[in-house]
Image (cartoon, rainbow, N blue to C red):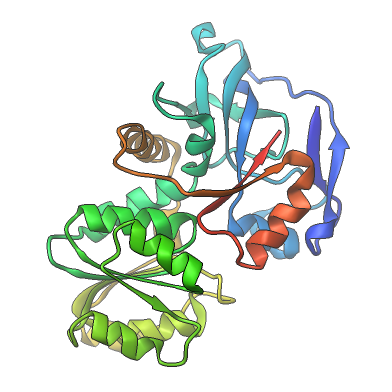
Length: 322
């Protein structure tokens, strides 16, 4: 089979097309023929040198999720799975390939009314966004600030917060992303590459505090946004696009009774992952949630996909197509 291999940590150029033996399912596994492969920012971080933190060493095939059709099943798997359209959800490994092996407990059926590329686009970001919105318990009229609103997960969070009846402020970089975010339901948009962006957020919130901060960027941007959160507010610090997670003052968090959820709160065990993925796919199939697919690259063009992600030229999602 065709696959992409990382032959050493480094820049996008270390992603090399290779031929590998077809995977064979273990007793509780299936092998799917991938139709679309998810890519996320974390893929670029691991490739760039974060692999040790995730127990990954070169050479390895990157990728943690793909959508396709079940090609073969292990001895412990119901054979009626064969031929079904499925999502091999987060926790899968080696997904940058034509054939992807995953455990049966990571498998999510794809509704008939949903395309496989759309399912792949929801694999990571749909699960995380659904889990976040459930945990944040966003309610009617609350002021919600979303950093990284033009990315794969940000575009989903904008739609979900809007559906909950919140006053949504979407922050992103550049007019194209801001126009996209506005079209997805944001009540106001702010470009955080501009020096006065915090003041623009205050204006968009009618000079009132932010109830919920969904920080998909981190770094100094996330820390600056945290100062806008009111007493008893809720914060999710799940993004590192600005170079690292936002540093928050623990004393301030306690004194103002702010609930903070970090990246560890969106790492789900298989049963919960499947529940959240099933819900996200159902919402998309019903037309209530739209994954934004901006770019599709041939599997052999994984290097170009990673460059696009790192250069922040992707609005929504970039997928690999075998």
